[in-house]
Amino acid sequence: MAIDWKSYRPPAPSFTGSRVWADVPLEKLVPLIDWTPFFHAWELKGIYPRILQDAAVGPRAEELLDDAQKLLAEIAQQKLLTARTVAGFFPANSVGDDIELYADEARTRPLATLFTLRQQVEKPRSEPEYALADFIAPKETGLADYLGAFAVTAGIGAAELAARFEKAHDDYNAIMVKALADRLAEALAEWMHKEARIAWGFGGDEDLTSEDLLRERYRGIRPAPGYPASPDHSEKATLFAMLDAERAAGITLTENFAMLPAASVCGLYLSHPQARYFAVGKIGRDQVLDYQRRKGLELRAIERWLGPYLNYERVAD
Image 1 (spheres, rainbow, N blue to C red):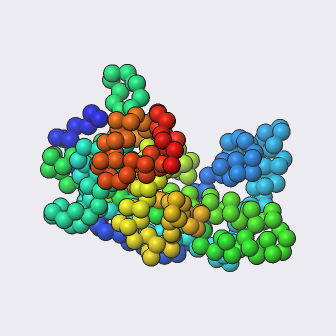
Image 2 (cartoon, rainbow, N blue to C red):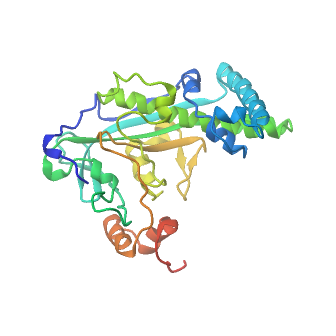
Image 3 (cartoon, helix red, strand yellow):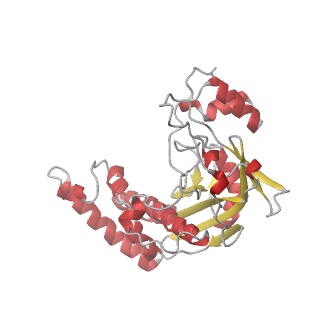
């Protein structure tokens, strides 16, 4: 990755370690909702707001949106769901394809290591093969860089509210609650990222509309474990330990690294202006073996978590 580290000075956040936002008002999140995935959850294909004018699905989309907004207003007014988040910043430097995190500013006490994967696709010579570690200052530069992390949920109370509707044989609103909780969780992730950029010193002067936020017209990225740039879900375990997310935000991980409540989002914050999203794509056995060596796990476990991304047939368990 061609980053000019010699002329770059990483921004220092206003705090290190993690902090909790215990009860974010839902009214702050509603304007940040991206409604397009909401319609997809109901198997209505289209982009909001254009979907409302669609000749085929427009009337159904309008009806769904009206019902959703009525229930959302009730949820917000009666505080039927709770939005909670934990987020923090940690001194960090990259070492190869790994991101080392430190317990203090002296950077002498290791806190954790996050392991990243590099693209192995054929590209034009001028375009690099990315890994998330590329966007953190290498240790040998001597630069004091930082990595952010977050875990948010808007699903506290969702299971109980859905159960209440199910008990009343109202499956429609039971499903609606889950769909709205998912949208609120994504909106909370957007809201928290804004707060993180302010704490990092470069987000306070932003003048962005809700559409700008949805289109990610800001500095930095927030990649999530299990998604294209970081396909290994097991990295969530390290992230959760860093943040003490179960205690701080009330989010737990299953043995397969799914989050409970389901309406939860977690990920990392990277601040470099050149940081970008990408897809790792298919991974060769050479990189899998290197990744296994770095993580110190059995090859079978690594291949299980990376199964859909392997470019070779793994031996069945």
